[in-house]
Length: 520
Image: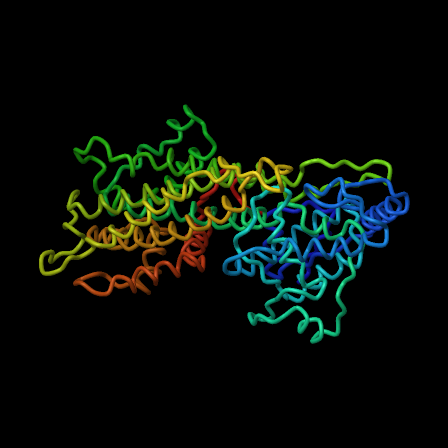
């Protein structure tokens, strides 16, 4: 591992964040960041000695902001806030998400406006480097005042409380500290508040969504192109000239990708002079529909990157004499774009379900239900029921959590973002989408068989070959759930998109004409 990233001074992206979480890049504190962190910590000590009231340093929290805390109790105040705010419920969030929370929190604190002690940051980085991940329950944040409950659970192990996962095994933080001969951190003034004020729970889900939705978008174009081949659809609607007349970036990219995936196909050439005037929308309008979801992804990527390099603490410490108690912890900027991305992901599943239905109808010289001997065999009748169910479930998850607000903290926090729910819902929709896409691949691969001996393009044939290594041609009814799970695995492990990309490179096919749609 030769790659290095310097917290607090380098520009963090979703790609770099994921690389740190995967252990491919080493995150560390630069000398400049270390100086900024030390200076900010010293300013907080001055505030304590001066007894000037500063929120969360020598006052209570939330509705207790007018309650003065004595100098001798400022440290106890910070450990108390971690304990009292650790009220999350539900199962543990994925360990990768919890690790991303730590990475993004270090980046925010290392900017040097939070008064965190250097040794506290060093301990968090130790957790990241040793892959010792705190237990964080999935529910309990309203996405304002920071993600208070999940961040409190995330940092309980610093003071010897809570639980952590070591190589997948959950143990108490006390046992972990003993095992590694470490002592609990004694939090100083402002530190507990700095740890739990911020959007890192929402942000971690956003970072992972940038990756997962990107993969789903790439796969949507691939599975859509395969379905088009199975349905002997036209590539004319992907003509660059058409999309230059309505030049949305996402639409232009999808039209380019579909054209590149399908150019030179013998299947496509075989019906070039057919009497069909135009295809149904789910084939013809892929650039417009997939492209709209691409635009939503681009917005998610942009706002996530801004948040990755922001200070979301409160109060912000410019100096002992200059502190601002504001609202940078409020999750609304991410909450809204996550809700937008949820609709974008759901629509990819919606249009894929329609293509599955088309392939079942028995039109365009395909057998009904995509099986030669229908009657004795039900063929692919029922997998589309599953896509219909998943599409409908996704629709119910599209209500924007950010449109709601329930006042908390005795009215002091009277508008909250609910962005934590937005982030979790997006991943639930992507979970369903991946199964919908697996089922579309099952249909498309089968439909292409009825175009033999004609061949498609190198990329589509390579992906078809990969599918057939795991899911054979359907001659009669069998346990299709096994096929769906096999295809789902090819999606989630990235091998299908990887095969498409590698084959495209080997054949000098450019699937991307806009670098904005890449993750760096």
